Image (cartoon, rainbow, N blue to C red; front, side, top):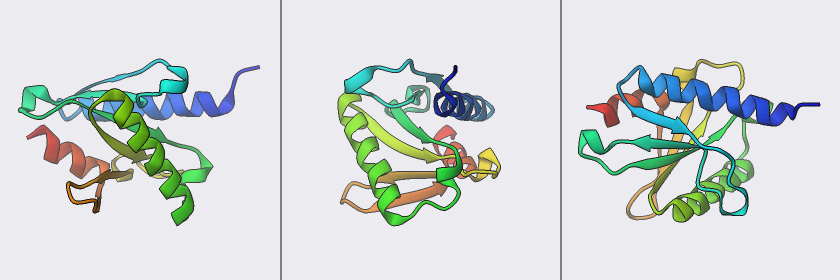
Length: 128
C-alpha cells in the first residue's frame, strides 16, 4: 500500500516546482535523504545573481490553519535542513484547499526576525 502522506508531499512539491518554473525560476525536487535531510526542493537562483536555496514543503490538512506550535516546529525543521544543505532555507506551506499562488513562504531574516510572503510574491521578488 502506498504512503498517502508521501504521495501528498510529492504532489505538493511538484506543484511548487512547476509554479516556480512559470516565473523562470529553476527548481528541482529532491529524493528523500534520511537523517541528514536537506529540504524538499533545490532552488537555483544564481542566474538572478542570488544564492541558491532550499525549500521545506508542508502540505495536507495540517496546513489548513496551523497553530503557532506547529509552525514553530516546521520552521525548526527548515533551519536544520538549511544548515545541512549549507544554504538559505525557506518554509513553503501549501495551504489545504487553497491556490498554489496563495501558499505561505516563511524565512528567517538577518537579525532573527521572521519574514512572510505569499508564494506568487516570493517568485516575483526573487525572479527579477
